[in-house]
Structures are given as structure tokens and as C-alpha cells.
Amino acid sequence: MANKSLGRGLSALFGEDNLDPAIPPTAAQPVKPKNGFRSIPLHRIEPNRAQPRREFDEEAMQELENSIRLHGVLAPITVRRSDNGYFQIIAGERRWRAARRAGLESIPAMVIDADDQKMTELALIENLQREDLNPLEEAEGYRALIDQFGLKQDTVAERVGRSRSAVANSLRLLSLDEEVRSMVIDGKLSSGHARAVLAVQDASKRISAAKAMAESGMSVRQAEAYVKKLNKPAPQPQEPAVPQEFQPDYYAELQQKLEGALGRRVHIENKKNKGRIELEYYGDDDLERLVQALAAVIL
Image 1 (cartoon, rainbow, N blue to C red):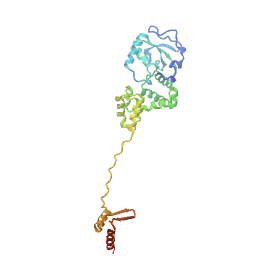
Image 2 (image 1 turned 135 degrees about the vertical axis):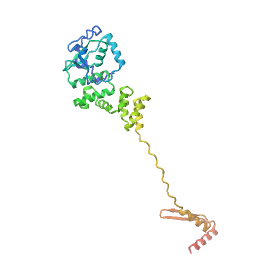
Image 3 (image 1 turned 120 degrees about the vertical axis):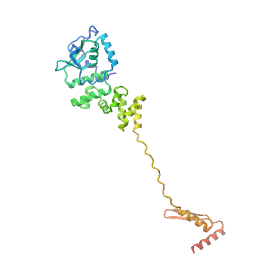
Image 4 (image 1 turned 30 degrees about the horizontal axis):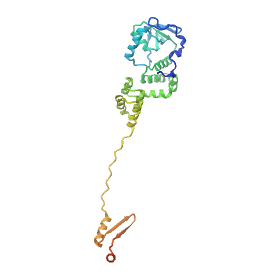
């Protein structure tokens, strides 16, 4: 569905009074020229080099050609006069192409006065209303208004009836790699998928990410979740613990020596800057023997 903020089509720009509702268009009796409308020979019309649309689906073109053969051109194209005496297409190049293929000699058209900027704006608006542009063609249309005519993004958004964020997000697509851009043009990736690709922090992984999205049929939300996983830093390998150098247990050796000399269990408890020695004895007689042994050592 076309964006309602874009208005009711080019007729809203030029006024519906220019159309003659009393005469229904047919193959034998196409739209009757009235006021700005007239019938123009096809050979006196040339395409617009600034036309934002670059891709014309062959199947859709064939359907339009068949329709024109049966019913004629139901919607007039919009043109401006060129300095060379020809008429340059502002809106309706697809209808002009199909009319030529159908063998028509002339086509109903509305001639308006428009400078280069106005022509570019109207061509972009008309394609946006018809939803005829792929995401990259839309972005290139915005870029043309910015680069060629020095418009700011917010001005472009206002002129075409888009939000500023929509224009900014669209322009971001122009930084995609050529391979990913081709996938967008071919319809394998939507603009939402393409923006998810741009969110991949490691630029070297973007093409492979785009292919994974296209081949798996991910939704945009799934693609965004996939990118979040890709952006998570890889876990750092844990460095192996450095083994402490072997040190002999000095206090264990002392315990063993004392137990051998005194003939009993000895426990040495060592703390920072202090400690204690525990000696076991077994009855009063054994205590007397322990005291004598210690006296002998001390003395």
C-alpha cells in the first residue's frame, strides 16, 4: 500500500480538474487531453536520465504491454519540454516503454514546467507512491536530491513525504558491499535485512551474514538476533595456571624430627609472625617423661 503521506498521486499536484471524467479511457478512445494534457508522439519523448528507477521487471512489463494493447494507456504520463524540442519524462517511463512495445504511435501526457530539481523530486515521489522502487533505487533517489541540489536530509524527507529517520536509514544502504546490494536488488534481502547486515561490526563478515539470511529465509527480527550473536566478543582463552615452584614443607620436617626424638605426636601450627607447637602425652607418667625429655633438650 502506498504511503498516505505522499498524497493522492501526481493528480493531487496538478489538480483533478485536468482529467475529463466524462470520457472513460479505452483502446479506441484513450484519455482525452484537457488543459495541460495532450497526445504526444512517442518518438518525441525521451526518458529522464535522473529517473530513480533502474530495474524494470520483464514479466511485469509484458503484463502492462498486454493491458495497453487491450485498453490503451489509462494513466497519462507526465513530461516537461526539453531545450532540444523533445519532451522529457518526469513520471511514467514504464508506461512509455510498454506503449512503444505495444506499437502505439502516441501517448496521453501532461506537460508541466519543471526545473531539474522539481523533475527529480516528482519522479521520486511518483515511484514511491507506486512502490515501484527497490530499496537501493529509493536510496539513490534521495542521494541525488542531496548531492545534485544541496538539500538536507530533513528537507528531502519533507519534499517526498517521508520521515527524516526513514530517509537516513535508506541512505545507509548505499554503503553496502556490491554483492549485498545485488541481493537487495534481486529481492533476496529486504531493506530491513540490509540494515541488519550493516549492523555487523566486523565488515569482513557482512557478506557471509547476508548470504546466511537469504538462504535460511530469516525474518528481519531473526536476522537482527543473528547479528547480535555475531557481534558478541569471542570468549578469551583462559591462560593455564602457572605452577608454583616446589618448596619443601619445612614445618612438616620439623614435626617429623620432634616426633622421632620425643616419641609422640607433634603438631606445629604456623601463622604469620607467630605459631605454636602441640605435644601429646598419655597419662601422668608419660607427662613426666615428656618433661624430662624437654629438660634434657633445653639443658
